[in-house]
Length: 302
Length: 269
Image (tube, rainbow over all chains, first blue to last red; front, side):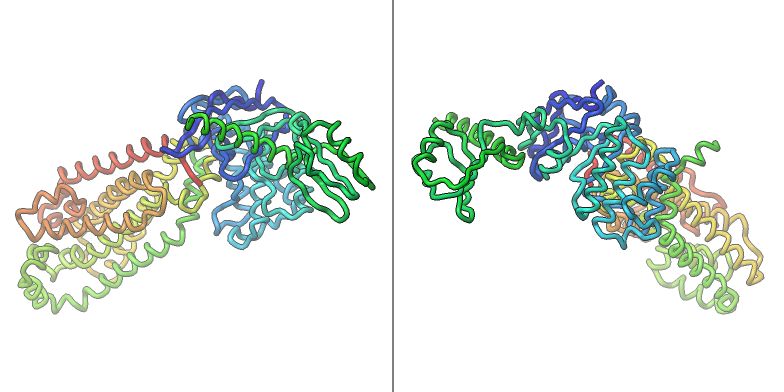
C-alpha cells in the first residue's frame, strides 16, 4: 500500500496559486524527499494532506485513507513536524508533550523521556523561554513520541545546531529502519541527497521531476575543475563558471570530444570531472522549467 | 460518562489557559458586588432622599429602571447597583471568552499544533463550547455565592426569589452573548477582542435606548439585556419568556454557525 498517493491534487487560494494538479506517490517504508524553494507549494501540499485545508480539486490518500473522509484515522498514524514550531507560551515543555499525548489518547511518557534525553531538552522550562531551536526540539518529540507510521517533516532542521541535526537524522534513520515512512520536505538539498531514496521537485505548485535521488542527480552535465592556463571561449555548453586559485570550475553539458580538444591545446596541470551535486541539479531543473515557460510565452506572443 | 471526563483534554487545556482571566474577572465582579452589598446598610437610611433624587432624573431614571424600584429595599438597591456590575461585567467576560475561543489558535499560530492531532473539528468545537459554558457557569456560581454571603453578613433578609431570578437572567444573558460570540469566533482569523467588547457594549446601550424611548421598544427583541431588567423582574416576579426564548434561539444559532463554519474552514497557522 502507498503511504501517500495524490491524484490531481489542487489547492488555489482565491486567485492565487497554491498547488496545481499534483500527482505524487510515496511508497510505504520510503524515505522520500520533497524539494522546492520557499513558496513553491510544499507546506500547502502537507497542510492539504493533513486536512488543515480542503483541496480545490483532486484527491489524496494516506495509507489508503481519504484525506477528506478519514482525517482522524490518518492523523492517528502520522507524526508532523511543522516548519514553525509554535506552542502555548505559558505552558511548560512537559505539559506540551503531555497535551500532545493526551490528544492522541495515549501514554508516550517513556518514549518522550528517551527522545528528550537524546535531544537534551529541558522539560521544566516554559515555552516562552525557549529559543527557536529548543522549540523545534519540542516539536520533534511531539512528532515522534507516539511512534507514528508516517513522519511528515516540513523544513525540520531550521534552528537546530549541527550536532542536534546529526542526532535528529540518526533518530530518523533508526525510525526508518524500523519501518517508518519518512516524508521530508526541505530546501536544504544536502539533507535530501544524504537521506532520501526518492525525491520530487516542486516549482510554482507543480511537480517538475520525481525520481530516485541518484537518477535525479544524473544529467548530461558534469562538474569540471581544471588547473592551469585554460581558455574556454570557443567551447559551447559551459555555464556556472568560477575562477579559483590557479584554475577554473564550470558545469559542462557539451560534447566531451570538444572539451578534450580545447583542453589539449592548453597547459593543463590538473583536471577533475565529477557528477554535479543535487544543488546544481536542482538549479538545472529550475532553469529548464523557466526556459519552457519563456518559450510558451514567446509562442503565445508570436 | 467516565470516558467523556477523561478525554475532555481540550476542556482541561482551555481551563488552564483561561484561568488567569477567569480569576481576575470573577474577583473583580464578585468583589464589586460584595462592596455594593456592604454599602447597603449605611445607605439604607439615606435611601428615601436618594430615591427621590434618582426618580427626578428624567431619561436617566427610565434608562436604568429606577422609576419603578425602591432604593430603600435590598432587592431594589441590588437590582440596580449590583445588576449593572454583573450585567456589564458578566457580558464583557462572556463575550471576550467566547469570541476568542476558536480564533485564538489561528491568531497565536497554535492551530497547526492542535489540528495535526487526531481530534475531529466537531470535537474541537464541542470541547471549546463546553469550556465557554463552564467558565461562564463557574463565574456566575462564584458571584452568586459571594452575593448571598455578603447579604448574610450584613444581616438583611434575603429576597431569594428575586435574587435567584436576577442571577438566572444575567446567566442566560451571558450564555446568549457567549453563543453569538462563539459563532463569530469561527469566522475570525485574528483576535476578536474588539468585536466581543463592541457587541456586548452595543447590546447594553440598545437596552438603555429602548428603556428611554417608547418608539424604540422593538430593540428589546434584539438585546438580551431586555430580560435582565431588574425592575421588570421584581415587578412581575418572573422572566419575560418570549424575550428569553428569542435569546436562546440566537444563542443556538451562534452555536450552529460555529459548527458549520469551523468544520469547513481552511486553517492557516
